[in-house]
Length: 250
Image (tube, rainbow, N blue to C red; front, side, top):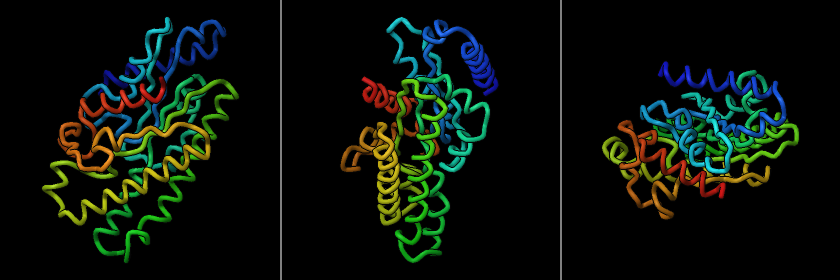
């Protein structure tokens, strides 16, 4: 973890130097920034995350591509928006990044899932509707904040959805019954609808991870793509997400 943080610090220092340097220098390096939660940070797998893999896949046009991974475990869509509006490190990174990847929303619904599981709300709609509306609003505002920071410069903005907003695969089968697993799938699809609606109203791409992990019908077992906790991607899962981003960028 220290090595990765050190590498990120070096990359951010280089970014700031480029920002303060000539226009010619800025065109030689493409910065790709990833913002969002623990899936973005890749903190659970001890592997190279999808942000770095995606950036590496963009190489080949004569430009150096540098990944800036600013994912924060546990962060919500409100945290993402706050960082874009108020955190200097995040704002500086976005200002100099022509590719911005956002993945947020799963942690927003975790408390609602706990309420549903404990019976503190009477139906799925009672538990999740307000939360998902806020996710959509926060992500749309986040995209607009990215555009404002970029000041009109060309920017590719990609919003990622989720294969599941909680644990899946073998871990979920061991932990929960079929009814609750079906409910988490329904909530995941609703969360993805909120994410992709935010993408649509702000005219950016919504990149699907649900089908690559679970198939269009949700019947594919995602276990090989998940870390031991069942909640985060394995190295193979990060590669699948990076591939989806590259396909969306082609």
